[in-house]
Image 1 (cartoon, one colour):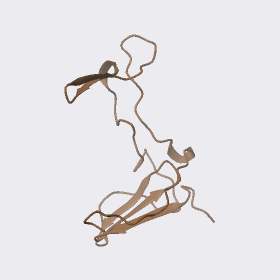
Image 2 (cartoon, rainbow, N blue to C red):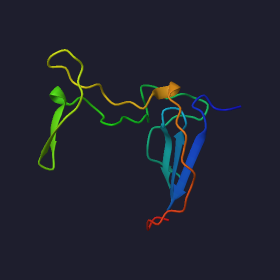
Image 3 (cartoon, rainbow, N blue to C red):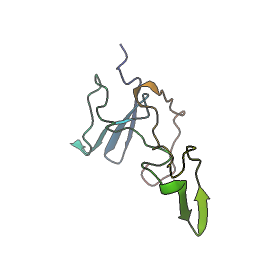
Amino acid sequence: MQPPSGAQHVIETGGYRAVLTESGATLRELTFEGRELVDGFAEDELPVSARGQLLMPWPNRIGDGAYEFAGRRHQLPCPSQRGATPRTGWSGGPRGRWAGAPARRSRSPAG
């Protein structure tokens, strides 16, 4: 039987182990040499209070949807009301299903 958070994708390298779920591309578990690094949740649970869920393309509000980066001003789409800010990014939570790309060998020093 599949867990409520969907398929579990495990990534391991250099003593690190991460478990990401199909549901919302959520980080369910992160350990280093067996030591827990995040307050995750069990495989048979769903995350509480957005625990481990991916916030994208930005994690919070951006005043008037405008920001400057590398000397350039950028404007994000905003709701129609004046002074509104774009919505916080969110990957879809328990209902948003994500599929992993096929595994390939990394060329990074980590492996």
